[in-house]
Image (cartoon, rainbow, N blue to C red; front, side, top):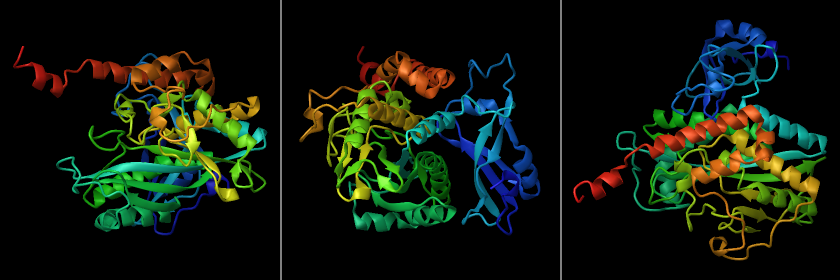
Amino acid sequence: MAEDHFTLPEGTHTVILGMGDLNGIMRGKRIPASQWQRICSGGNALALSLFTMDMTCDVWDTPLVNFQNGFPDFHMFPLHAPVAIPWEPGVAICFARGEGMNHGPVPIDPRQALIRQVERATEMGIQIQVGTELEFYLLDPETGQPRETGNDCYGLARAATLEPVLGPIRQQIEAIGIPIEQSNPEYAPGQVEVNLRYDEALIAADRVVMFRSLVKQLAARHGYLATFMAKPFIDISGNGFHCHYSLWSDGQNLMSDKGRLSDRGRHFLGGLQARMGEAAITGGTTVNAYRRRQPYSFCPVNASWGLDNRTVALRVIEGAESAVRVEKRDASADCNPYLLLAADIAAGLDGIAAGTEPTAMTDGDGYQDKTAPPIPTSLGEAIRLARGSDWLKDVLGGQQHELSLQQAERELAFFEQQVTPFETQRYRDVF
């Protein structure tokens, strides 16, 4: 459909047009309906710093956007017809794509890294399908703490308690066009998981960006603070972002060989495993993200793999032809989905191209598998590996690679310049 023919739902007075920033946070503008056709034809201008600011909206001098060039513009264009928001009468929402002032792609738009890998897969005759699972906390906005106590994972009583907010999250977000398979209480008080239906990789990533934004909006309307922060509480479960990958061609799941993992699926798995260390930065961009990576936390600490095993990093699921897939379990719920999926898919496609074999399968406790390749358990180590990876630089693009690492290095520096409450309480009065 031509962009200038994206029609508005009847009764629309305002359109939300937005896209993912450097951290996969949805940002954009609210536009009067009277301006919609003009926006469709000519785009909507935003500062290019949307792609160069951190999660707090702090900016710094970057190679493409800086004080010397005056923080120039780019334009957003709608990707689809706006969809009415059920909880805001007269307001519709639309996801956007970025376009540079030269009418070409924006090199530091994280979406571009994933587009390149999707195009590469297409050239190989493969369509990548991705299902996403996102964990988050629903907290009291005044205290920042869960309103519930105790762990009631999968508990239907806990689910009923949370239904006044989780019900609208499932139903109203699905009404906007993001298909939701299920929700359940997770492994801590106040923690929940929502599974989004698998789809083409680029669509799946767009949906993650919009989903996280809509969850926070809906939670606030129902008296909760929703957070996808990786590890809000040190002593209970962190928030993961699990990705289920399958490969398709002409309606056939290329990962399946009579319900078992095929040769091509095994090579995709081998490629994923081989690059997990140097690509770790795409799934964990903050100091806090690596606090999840602890033994017996259901977050992996090595690049082990196994059959239907939640102690490993790469969980192979077999069964029906359409169900065979690989679940990658290391990423944090607050990471940028475009960069995560781009790196994962690039690694998997490399594995197919090279016929990469995974290491021996872990049978049992993945945390005790001393032969599995290590993955970073600190931001400093993740930065070091990513800095030294020409492969990751090629996958993300030189400017995106540098920008992502600059942000990570700033986060690490900010953290290391703090005196924590732990230090004060433990040392101040005794030394």
